[in-house]
Length: 385
Image (cartoon, rainbow, N blue to C red):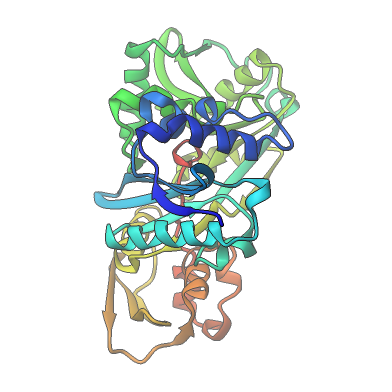
């Protein structure tokens, strides 16, 4: 008979745990989580108690990672957690190990007052646990000809790009200062900042205009996508992106932009080849009050929402009334008669999904709801485990 233990992995379990994860995820492509997610799985950063694991006859055969971080949104503090590296050895599947470990992780999130959790993965698999596709991320797609035909032959003049080396603390500090100035940011500790910037094997590129540091971009390993792009003068975005395409030999690439980056939206839309609106991931909301209020506050910073209110009855949660007065949000649980009855997953989809304004169900025809939704929930790629 097998002896099975459900544990929280400690420092002594590091090598065995990472070996299992690498094995499970290397079925199609060789994978090394120590370089793919160094903030979580490089030995120097490994945190005891953040990986839930199954030991069967003394060997780790399944794991689920759960990594909490602090998130600042328009002055509001949130505590969020990413689920990562959900792995079960091929010979140990269909034993309920994944379900048990996910339940353990989510139980601890609720006890630890996590506001929301997020993950990558198949929709139906994770909707059993309360996660559902949510959030909005725009992808601006570019062809190298977009720049030349829109801007002319002087495009890129004076722009220099420099890839930031891992040991360049001074330059990473400049990058960190730019990132921290954003009204929405996950707290990236100084001692792990360079590791965060290399998540998913991304590289950090410093941007200069006439030798003056003006910002940075973060590009995926193959340079097909830029997942962070912050410069102090948005009008130089075309010059920077043209220089990127020339220097890194990319005829086609995309740039991720989030709803609140209004100036960047306005500028890139003038010459991008196309733009797509995507979900940002699978989210599970635990604290509706803090999550909704924080991101609705963000929405009110970049758009005007008319006065009004709506009450959602969320099954097993309560009646959540969301109001706007003079573009200031109010979110509270009330005894108000609900305008719509929802499961928790339906509530997340209405509140945060990229298509919610077009799928209002019984709120169809409610002009306030059409202006209110979606609320711009997201977590940047480099902060996603």
